[in-house]
Image (cartoon, rainbow, N blue to C red; front, top):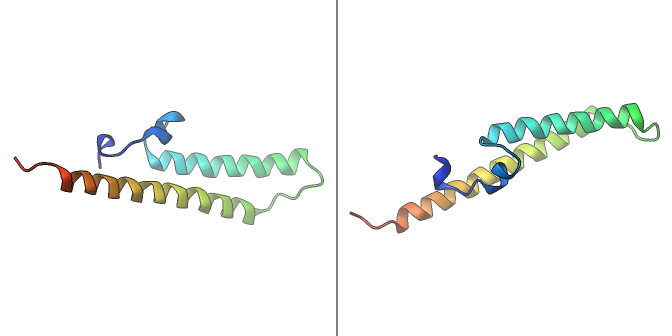
Length: 83
């Protein structure tokens, strides 16, 4: 799937060109947030299950985005005139 077949506005807005990069950054952000909670918020508890849940949510979001892009590109392909 080429970048021209789907609108990549969301990924480009944050400087990303590949969905896998968005997934990795989501996992990293989740880990850093939990680390910040552990280090700086004594009344909050950082748990591994939170990191897993947030990371799965991020990956699910990337998967949904890719599915939407695939559907959009399939619709465009069907509408294209036959030469």
